[in-house]
Each structure stands twice: as C-alpha cells, then as structure tokens.
Amino acid sequence: VKPPFCAHPHCGASVASILLQGGAVLPWDNVQGQEQKQLLPGGIYHVDTGAGCVHDEPLEPISSRARVRPGFGNEPDEIELEAAAPTIMIQLWWNAIDMCAAEGIPLRPVKTQVVLPADVPRVAL
Image (cartoon, rainbow, N blue to C red):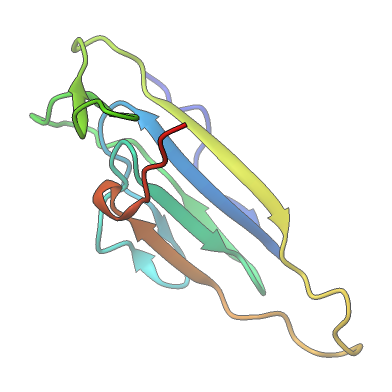
C-alpha cells in the first residue's frame, strides 16, 4: 500500500490532523524530530509550521493493535473495526501568519503537539 503523500514542506500554516479511524500515525518533522506520542484514532496532531519545516504523518508500518474508531456520545471510548477497515483522517488548515506584525519580524518557531484521544473533549450533541 502506497501512502497518499510523503514528507513535504510547509511555512506559515497551522494544520490539525484528526485521525477518525484506523491504526496509528507516527508524525515527525525535520525541526523537532519524531513525536513522543503516536497519533491514535480520536486524537489530534497539531503542527504550527511557523518559519517552515518538512513534516510527515506516516502510518504505522506494522501493528498488532486493533483498528479502531473513537466512540461518540454514549458509545464506548473505542469501537473495534474489521482488520481491513480503512484509515480515515481529516485535516483543518488555517493561516498562522501574523498579518499585523511589523515588516521584518521573523515567523514563529515550529511547534507541534499530539493530543491523545482521552485528552480530547467529548461533546454530546
């Protein structure tokens, strides 16, 4: 299986990747290296690319972990899926450049964070 993309550059953008179902994702970038935590279904990976970085969100190559999706509302925290269930991830992008900053002010340093599923607030609709 070929991933949809590989390591790629960004500058000035903020991106939140939300893993909706599947296995684990192992995010890294060329500034801070490998994330300490894996992105798991129901979790969020945020990268503020600031002054620029190359990053990737590769899928875990081999795993004995069950493929899951997060529970919503009154469902359990994790719902186990069939082994062939696809990985589904969405991304939210926004312009993270301070358009009011004085000319010549450098962009922010790169910052990343993985939020574990248990730390993502659940909202019942």
